[in-house]
Length: 376
Image 1 (cartoon, rainbow, N blue to C red):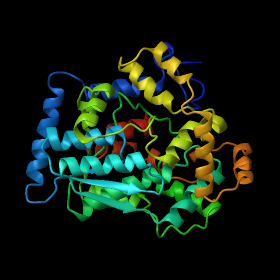
Image 2: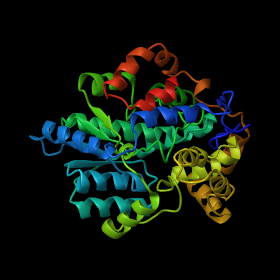
Image 3: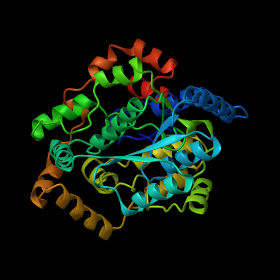
Image 4: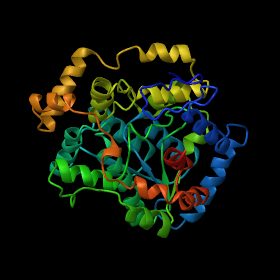
């Protein structure tokens, strides 16, 4: 069973095909395409948005917050915001203890080259280690969710403190696609429940994100999320050349490999335990966007994301860093697979607030993609 248009297949538990064998992710893509059409006016809209941002933050040192990881997308996002839009960004990084040397170098290089201030939030290592370990012990498919939540909280917390009303995100639906909820789910209550059951439950030193934070940052403070890469033609080859030539950026070997934890999750843990290849979502997006042919994308997916030697070394590093024994990890790999549906989360509450959430995305307080991902 496979979508006739993209690469989505039966490895996605929630896959739904219509009578033409078109999947729900293609339909979400088309909805996003209506929201962010690429034409002569698309980039002009982005410049109009930037004018409003400049005016709003004219009396402040910074007029926006940009999350940076050292990866291609976030690095180019910062470059574009500073060099092309001429905004005054504050770069923010969440250090979870798993940054690769290349990613750290990339972050420092671009901030220095562009004269952008950088603020790094270093996670409390003992707490973060135990939370991440609890996700592995829970047998769920998204052990990097605590990192995503930490990044999210850091950006909005910083914007709130600095009285900045705009947070920039480097996601592009045309190149990264739509991750199935059953694969990755981000929810503060989800983290709390897993850590209560498989950790020690003390989250006081973790940057968790609850519904109260959504109300505080998005509704009361009015902090808005902007996704500039949806407004522009985004070519990996062109972007990488610009970054290498102008800010001494270096590639780290694969999508999301700038984080050693995520590299292990997407390249080894998910394929072997869950038969999940997260590259499927990004290449499906690029197929829909006519960036790559379906046949060429399939050939790439047949290739191993990392070598066996690299995988073994990475596994040894991750287990040692998380204080997980080889035996414990073997048991994790054998246990029943789970995801967010096996735990208490905000998901059931969200379903009852479809109309208010739709209103929030209409008012540009939350990204449309987030709305579509949860509600279809």
